[in-house]
Length: 404
Ligand SMILES: Cc1cc2nc3c(=O)[nH]c(=O)nc-3n(C[C@H](O)[C@H](O)[C@H](O)COP(=O)(O)OP(=O)(O)OC[C@H]3O[C@@H](n4cnc5c(N)ncnc54)[C@H](O)[C@@H]3O)c2cc1C
Image 1 (cartoon, rainbow, N blue to C red):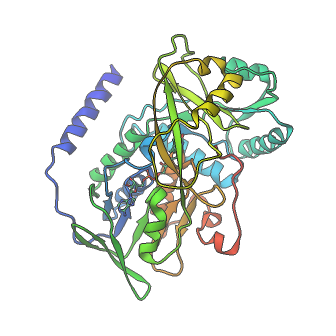
Image 2 (image 1 turned 45 degrees about the vertical axis):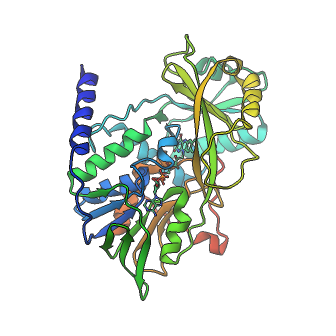
Image 3 (image 1 turned 60 degrees about the vertical axis):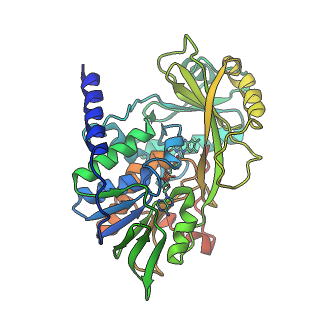
């Protein structure tokens, strides 16, 4: 019954928003956010809720960039303490999303299971789990037998151990963006879709406005949340956001009959092969070492033999399941596999959050909160100095080991 009411509420909210006539673009705002993926929408919600006057510019439709292509995985299992904090904070927000901002996102604690096959991997994961536990994340190293129990699709006598966290989860990415946009609008934010930011006006190091084909929005503060397209966004203001777009493809199997109702998002760490339940089938992917940087999101077949080869060994039932479809999206890669969140010093009030390197969906809620606090000069719940985009100028990298 609760679920039926939520579905009816969602249809009602979308119908209301969709039925609204297009409003003129405001001539000014406290903050202009460029990009309507999870990061931009989360920032818009957090800022509008705090009373800021916000305009979000999205050149296409909300969630049309990488966010709608994400596998929906949410985790706090990282090697870097800052990433653990961001994952943990975001998981808490996702868990309460139905109350704040008030939208159903199909949040489910399915757990993440990292399958480990080398002593070197196990060593790093042991240290990571100890750090995660210190920070309140209930992850643990499990035996091969327990790993097979948690995920009966697994096979292979080369499994040394696995790292498992039962509170890692899954949610629907498009719903998250729509939910944040709904919440932001409830607090007065203006969300302008089909509206591209074409230029940022800067006078003597101070931002004065953002140009679009529909007019200029006067503002003193810009947040760049342009995902894989962040480099161009930075260039508009004369700053360097070192983000490289890398295609990542996923496939779906046809319904697989007797899949366990609850299956962790399972990752073979050495190969990067992962899968999780998607309806009555599975979504799966593998990292492709031959992929070259670029903005193409066309799907190709050349990576599939490698995926099937790994699956044949690690989860043979998956290798023989019929394929029903797939898609390609972009990872927004940073030079060290870790996000860039902060504010440039050389220009007044240009903030950014990008370079998430495959884990931006899960860090979206915490990132929106941080951007709000940076804009409003509030105390941050965590120090994000190590994530400054300027770390690459000094070579002070903040590498994350656990990138899939
Ligand atoms: C196949 C795949 C699977 C993934 N799985 C996961 C996962 O399980 N968990 C996880 O955490 N992450 C995952 N990711 C990564 C995740 O999708 C991204 O890190 C995250 O969505 C980035 O969000 P974003 O808001 O920064 O960028 P985006 O969602 O790309 O949003 C940026 C937006 O900016 C807009 N834009 C760009 N330039 C302009 C401009 N000039 N004017 C106006 N608008 C502009 C774009 O149209 C776009 O909508 C996955 C990615 C892929 C491709």
